[in-house]
Length: 64
Image 1 (cartoon, helix red, strand yellow):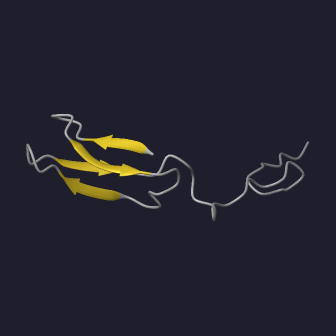
Image 2: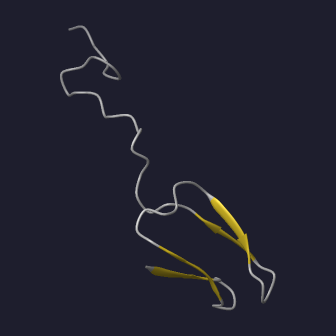
């Protein structure tokens, strides 16, 4: 478990397990009223893969 704390006053906001944050979270601190923006550390699993090097996408062809 990881302690998630306020960026301004370091008050404990919540405790989270590995991979618990799946998307952007905004949480207001009870102590100082700061709105904290949290996002996942790991990339989303449905991201697009890079095209292969053999692919013609994005390459420029200059005739001789």
